[in-house]
Length: 366
Image 1: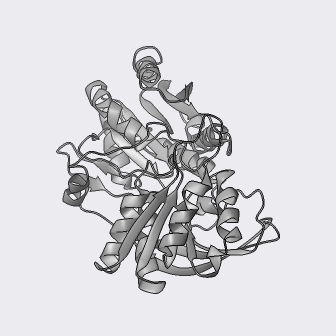
Image 2: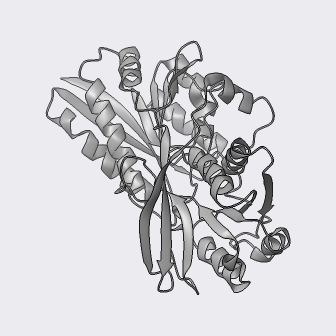
């Protein structure tokens, strides 16, 4: 009987059960292999706070102790970029799963790395573009310092500029709170009040979401300023003082049932199904990579460093979200199918010519 070892990297989270949901979905997707002559062994490692040294030791165990043919899990693009060279040297496959806070840096990835993601960085572009085309020329990015450490501000700005080069972009980001504390919204709100933009694009998550929105509404800013946000701005909620409308996006263009709390299972399921579909007919790890590329489901590059597959739809789905009953009721309707940003390889390279800051851990919005 043929054997295959799949290394699984699991993070922690205090809001959604990321690891448990992902692993459950992965096992469901791998079920067809259990009916074949292939014995599947899962080797699970926990990434904790995703420190550089800790992650290096974990990947060494996948290579040298578990002898994993494929490694997958809930992993940030930054983490994938840092280990891509190792996967090329070892000729192993890495299937990255995340919700897509960061633009993939093709200058640091390898043909061994496949990014399976909701690519929320593209949603930020669409929201910026939509805002300028429909709500006004002035847009502001507002965020906690943690959620600002991704590609959202940049892509929001790019979307606004693509809609109208004369549009006015500004930002307000909270300072780093003391350990165990939440963002001080008094650092952010005066800037919104002073600028009075036509719309804001807010990236907060967890308990900071209602904290920001309640302070925003307490000042009456919601009466004149439209609120745009990613799907995680509408889930989960812990209570709002007033009813509120938020324009957002659907996580997956083609499937409204994949809600923020279900995406981790879905990513695991997709990964398991991809592995199950390519492994039986692949004679070695190189063929596994070739067949994964042929599926065109993931973002990946070829051996020459050129863009092989984008792994996403050209459009995103915009939604209107009416939140009532102290945040307990959420009524979501589809607003429209909207254009998004589908970059070329050269455009992606240009984005990374200067200094780039991004988090290693994959806990965005969760």
